[in-house]
Length: 217
Image (cartoon, rainbow, N blue to C red; front, top):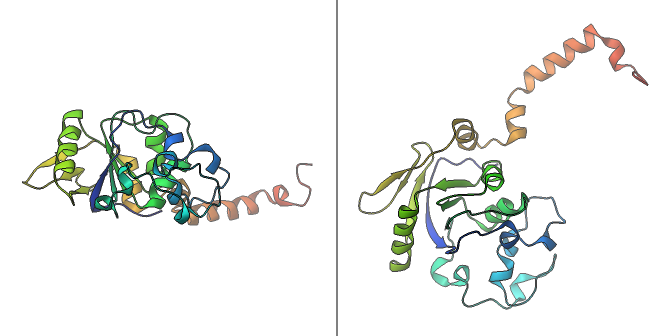
């Protein structure tokens, strides 16, 4: 998993409340569990004019000219700006997979669905909660200024903008540290690999019968 410390990136808008996970990555794309390859189908129903299917060459599909991610001014965006209750709906982990595979490292919104919020931290995407008023200000700046970018500092828990504006955001300490180090649940466990191996070796010596072929049958 990619670590997140300080990230400066172009901002793109998703200016609607209650964006659910089926909108982020539609159900037909959930057959794969490889964590990669979902970026071309992020917001598939909004992004394209036809119905997408797994394995389809998206480069040949007709784009929706009214969808912001298809605007040239947002090409290469790595920070997504959303509204209330972002990531609601089903608990599919494919949603942060698709966001990360597209290139988004951070999503800023006034609130997130709990499961989506947790899944983001486990997959290298930082969900930042700001007030509704601060998000309104960001949307105003975004629409008024092409090339609008922000700096998101997880170490200091700050979002920094032009004009010396700086807003703090909350994040639980354990989640923050895991993302700073680029550790998912497996990575956290593997930090104790030596201790686990020592325990298993001692257990094998202390209780060898547990490791005999057919033990417990």
